[in-house]
Length: 454
Image (cartoon, rainbow, N blue to C red; front, side, top):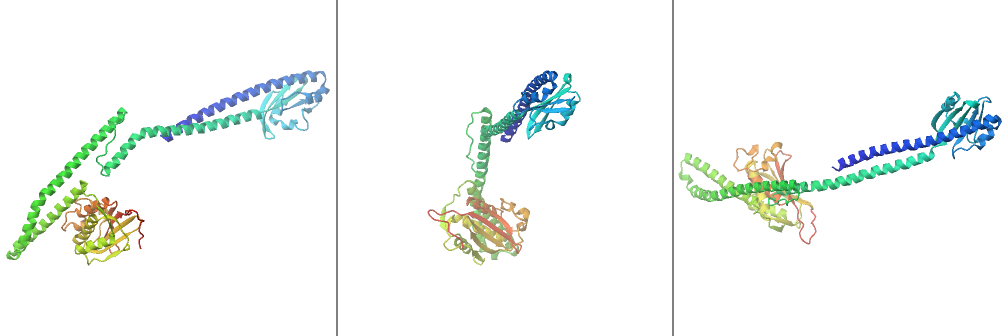
């Protein structure tokens, strides 16, 4: 809109300036030509009168003839074949345009503009047939040129100022017009980030009021539907939790008497036990996701050393054999939620164990702005086309299609990473396996400076 206003104003102002300048220039030059013609013919009449009485007075006449300041005159007597300039030391017939001189000597009266000593002039050639003579007079146009230059400069500045003013006007108008749209965009961004309670304020303009009302109604509908779905998933998970727990307890009881079963019944029992454990894990994951969606998983930050915390989590859950490395010093501490970190590390290690032949290394790195938890595995890696999708709920990569799991573990990792101000992604190791990286935003501890890493 600013560009449109600016270009429109520039085009209009430029066109008006060109028309104004052209008409002013034509008017001034016409006025100047009219004055010059009148004066030249008056002087030619005087020359005719004096020379007709005594041709020998031509030289004295030209010396005393009145011409405009800055101009000059020349008289040519054909019978004597002589030129009589007004100021021989400065002006002669050679300073006149040759075309005008030849035209006048041929018996015609003419007019021509030219330059002399870098200044503009207009010359008139008048044929005085009664005395067989030709009179030439040149008139300076410097004053007209200075006036036109001033007008041209003024118009140029006017065009520039009008263009700037139009741009400012367009900016002001566009700001007023787009301000409601910016509020809509800001509200949409907040809603996309999870702020479903955001609404647009009422507008005075009827059309904008309709937009705000429609937008708020849409958000209400979306919020209601998301809440219903979240509540449904939570309710289902809670309802399933009790029977699944009972089934798991029954499986544990039967596990003690597995040896009493026939080989075929043992196989059937193993299948049931595996599926019950898988069902139990899925229900637990669904419950956790329901809490995350409902906002119940508010972070409870503690001052911890991330490297020590990750190493203790791996050891506590039976992954102490996995090589561990870190670039953080023992005094490098930050504010983190232990529960979220433990869930992230455990899910990554279990994902590597269940789907990729086990984890091959755990590392923790960081700088002044972020921390990273990296888990590498011995699997076949993740295809480029699946690297984004495997962090979605119930999504499973090609390599894990035939293994156990609900497809929720990596989705939970991503949710916790986002809650910690970071994100999770996967790369490929030099050995061809998968490298899962979780980036966490570092929080500055109160009244302390960020610690340097080693």
